[in-house]
Length: 391
Image (cartoon, rainbow, N blue to C red; front, side, top):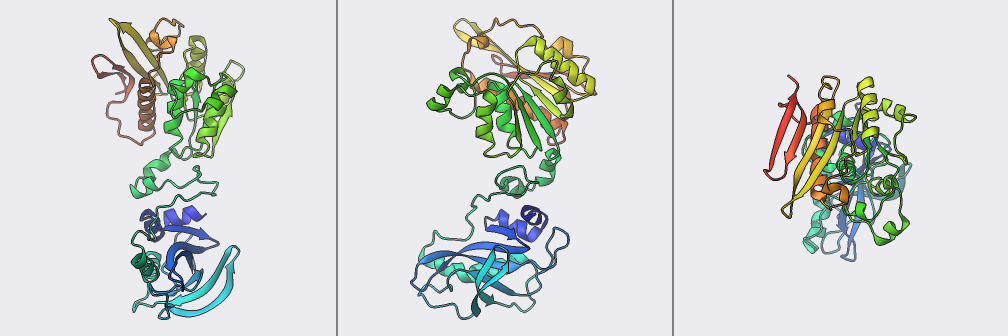
């Protein structure tokens, strides 16, 4: 509920977006601030104000001008108590988990219009003395805020979306369940990008182990100790990305005819495997149940001592699947340099980026004027050709 109240209240959202350390606990707003102690030392305390009557999950105008403080009695830069705002001192429990030590009053003529105005007024009074001692100290720390709200899929707050004012656009992903089939080079980058979106669930399907050659194709850097353990790809990547996204679901096996039904509950599927027979069965299943998908592919060949080739993204949607048989190969040729473990992580990343961009277009995040269902990037001419357009 804390993050919902903050996100839905313009005054609290403004505080958060400007970098104040705020949280809502039991209908009380807590703001972490630096202050000066009687020994002229800089400490950190908490301003506390009840939010009063909420309009659902949104704040209304503050009921009064009084605010509480947890910590020692704040002083000026000389170590003298700030008597001008001090109403009294008493250890008091305002609510479960919300304890305070002092009560302050600073009343403007017309009262406070909102909690942004109220909080920043008290922050200026208290923290300005700490800043006078150490100019590097301030209340806008942009500190990472942990999320315990089960409705928030991230373990910490995505402040960038809020500050960029695109939360409503990002919200289009919130109820989606997506699957990534194959967590090799391209699939692991798809996960890297998808884990930073607010999708409800990300399902990972792969039965292979994470080995040295995988480390050179995947995002980040695996340790030698990790490679010696030879974890399953999905387990290794889960351990990495579950630090950010709460709802990553691991399936440590390849999809077969007996497990294809697990895709029925998905809203979108990324197919990142080379096995032609498995790919064909997966795509047939997705077309039967009307689930949109993208299939990715990289073809690389050595010519005169240089590498050339292409990066492909082929999309299937309920609006168009008649091109699938012509655009996706279901054979297992294994005749290009990519299959020999040439390390070209940048092509994997590009393939994944193009696939994720197409997914975001389909679900209304990006504009999609072309509505192409097949794209091929040619390395040697540095161009993307789009085809299979839906009119």
